[in-house]
Length: 125
Image (tube, rainbow, N blue to C red):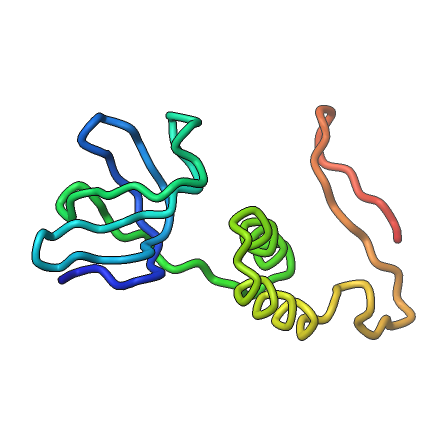
C-alpha cells in the first residue's frame, strides 16, 4: 500500500470530480481509499468522505510549518474540518513561534522595501 491514514492527496473520482483532501481510512484488499474532501470542483463533495481507487490518487508533499502564516492557514483548516486534536496541536506550535515584531530591535532604522505600480519604494518603520 502506498498511502497512509492522514496523508494529503489529490485526484479524480470515478465520476471525474477533482478532489483534494486527507485520507481517513484505507481498504487494502479492494485498494480503496476513503478521502475527507476539503476542496473539489463539485462543491457538494466538500466536507464529505469519498471512496476513491488508489490508482486515481497522488500523494501531496508535506507542508513546511515553519512560519506563523502557514500554521494559521492550517488552524483554519482544522477548524473547518472540526478536528479538535489537530487544532490544539497547531495552536501549541503557533504559540512557540516568535512574532517578528517582538524580536529585539537595534537602534538603526528599519527600511522595508515594497513594489508599487510606480516602481520600488521604501518605508521607514
